[in-house]
Image 1 (cartoon, rainbow, N blue to C red):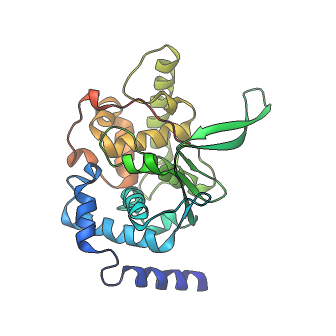
Image 2: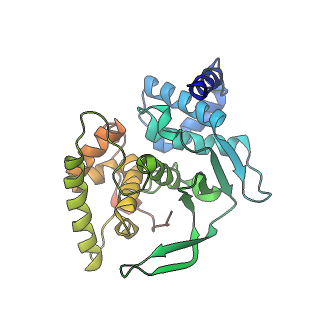
Length: 270
């Protein structure tokens, strides 16, 4: 209870007055096609969540890499979008965003289908660590607000939402009125069909990396949901309906339908 009191007090202080200069805010919004079509109410909600993220999270550079206020603002604005209509506590169980000057190497252990554990290095542009921090490549984070079908900040934030019940499995804790069976049916069928297409060399607009695991399917689709929602709604209507209900947003109502040649070659996040 005491922790909650101080956290609410800190939040209230962070949102008091004009925590982000309005002229700077307007310039950043105008420079992010990702935010096109948000009305005044939605933009104010984004402003408040961005201000909270800047006050609540520690933005740290990897090694001696310096993270400027403008860099932190760019990342926070993107991270605020998935929780635009969600409670701030959705991001309440982690504290640090580590920013790298480029793609970075991590050493991870993983198990195969035979139960054997392997360990090796991976080059990533982002990672949501189960033990706390969010890791991001700055060049890729800076590029992400463009509408091209991928966004490393949203990808990793989707993993964090997925982890709220303790594990990233492609099904985040659902809101009242949502049903796990509906989610499982929509995502399960779509994932099975997508993996079948990937296994048989059928290329489409969705990054094949989404076939790695249900958690990656959810995170990659979250990128497209916020950047190319018409593609998701057209090819995965049941999934799109569940995502609209989960994020409590319908980006297809505010964003243009991108031509498929807007798709960039996939860059894998973690």
